[in-house]
Length: 314
Image (cartoon, rainbow, N blue to C red; front, side, top):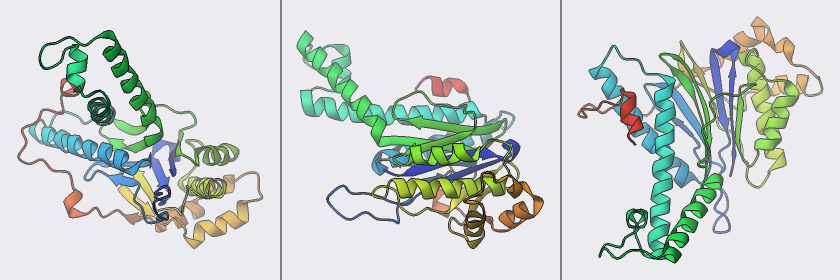
């Protein structure tokens, strides 16, 4: 599984996303600590961190990338329209639904020998009606696949669009969470340990970047100590700021390790809200450089994704 963390801080001006890098293969192979669980969507200031089955999470992220590219194409066609948080919400929801439907379709054909569309219509391709036993069996398949998705897919999406903040959490097929107070989201097997650490430190919107970075470091550390088999070393954090865009922060930098040594036995970290500590933290931020092949572009697509009705029709 893993650990993923998202926090909104600096008075709502900054989002920090963090995750570990462990990929587990059950009993077939030793785990790898070089897995990627963070996704960027350049040139948008939006990123995601995932937990669960990487193939499922990756498929959802890929669909999001495709639809966000369509959204940008529509923006070029309708430059006066705004890209808003609700667009990202709908894109994430559609990507999850598409993955769920694909899994249900596969299970339906494998177990009942009938397509999902045929089952929904209540008829076989030869127009013969399905009996009640087949209908109940199909419903059982759909429910089981939906329940299993809970352990295979968890994602935190954060960033900034033209009307403000994007801060979402989606687990399985459960409704998307888009409001959290305090604004802290955790996912994965280490989530309970991470949330305990965040709660003890009183992480909230008013915590500055420096203070939040220490809290994230402590939460990742406790998650790994609590779930040694499934949580690995941390990847570089993603730091998203409304004006500066997307940046990276080194997970195991000496500065934060020194802060940890100083504050680990203290009940409060409020002195890290100082201008000196935040200047030190900002000096370590590195501008994110996306791979050229990953930059979202649909130059040849005539798309109206900017219109809400486009997503409502999915």
